[in-house]
Amino acid sequence: MNVLDRLIAAVSPSAGLRRARQRDAIKNYAAGKPRLGQKYWRAPNSGPNTEIEPSLELMRSRARQMVRDNPYAARAVAVLVAHQIGVGITARIAGDGVQDAWDAWAAKCDHDGLHDLSGIMALAARTMAEGGEAIIRLRMVSPANARKRGLAVPLTLQVMEGDMLPLTVIGSARNGNMIKNGVEFAPDGSRVAYHLRKHHPGEKGGVTASLTSELDRVPAEQIIHLFRVLRPGQIRGVPDFAPVLLRMKQLDDYEDATLEQAKAQSLLGVFITGPDPLDAPLGDDSGTPAFELYPGMVHNLPGGSEPKFLQPSGSGGFEPFAMHQLLAIGAGLGVTYDQMTGDLRQANYSSLRAGKIEFRRKVEQDQWQLFVPRMCMPLWDAWKRAADVLMRMDGASVEWQPPHFEMIDPGKEIDAAIASVRAGFATWDQAVAGFGLDPVKQAAEIAKANARFDELGLILDVDPRRVANAGSAQDARQNAAVEIAATGAAFQPPA
Image (cartoon, rainbow, N blue to C red):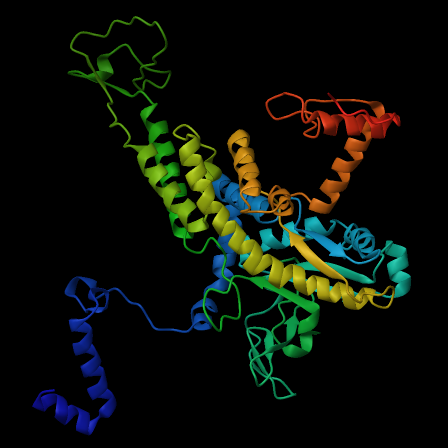
């Protein structure tokens, strides 16, 4: 520290600390060095909610507009939801009669009466992808209303967009809690309530309420707030499209400009030059010179006339730029280029498998760190509380099964699964679950099919008990025992 630094630190310790930090930054990371060419690179050290609050509504509107009008955005959302939720994250429940009660309730659980539970999950995932967050309100209904709806358990689910939770509700509640961006927090920082609008602000006649008295205060245990937590302390969610919205708009604008250029180039213009164009026997009734072109025409021009044709310049390379943008957009959204565009011209088994492995890791992370713990488990807890008055829930447990991934090469992947089970790297139950099936139900179906084959005395090539993988008969003693069980004949060991 030089003399000037000591003097500044003595007068203003904070200013002295800043000078010391700047000097250390010059010695350390290049990305943290102040450079002349980067003086306009502003990177404020703001908190997560300070960044999100002023931008969320506009980002949300732009993302929805892109999904409405841009085919790539629409397909990206469809691909994400199809893999994250698919036909539903299914519950495998242990407990007498509990699975049947759950299945009956799941078929009619939508408060609006439009979806089953799988549809509710898909709608929530889509709402989160577009708007950054989805709100699922858990509504208890009266026994009479439950009977009217045909509900096995008096609980319904209502999916809402993030617009229903106003960002502008900020301040202290009467009970001493703090309200931030519509969410009420206890002094220890835990969420205790959500202040929801009664109507969507974007609908005609909607209420754009910002005062707490004009909102519904809903306890936090009745709300599932689904969003990606990207930074600690984050209160509201950001649309998945946030990193790519500007690129998608640039691509749209570039495509429009290229189309207009192509239209201009398709026009053929001709100018007639000569000593005096008015002397040329060309024109309409008003005497204005004209020259009409048509296929196969042959026309003599007056002496001294010379035609000049417009020669518009050719367009630039549209496809390389578009592909570059789409690759970046796919990377930002977490989908592969072929998934977002449907372009498989340069794809092969190796490239598809490499891309899908990374994509599967992302989807599995969404499923097991977002949808299962923050949507499925809170839903299960609420359902158990509602069902506890109707049946004994002691000992009831649940396992969640997300949708399985389609195989790129079934022959290779099934052989790999068999080898994994035989080597002890996975159990049969785990392998079956990996294909999106319930091992308990699958085993029951296999036993049922085998019993029917044995009863009818059928030996099919697909029966591994009777026919080896290569097509030869299995152990003769085993086959004889199966036949005896089916016919009741006395057992005669083979010679």
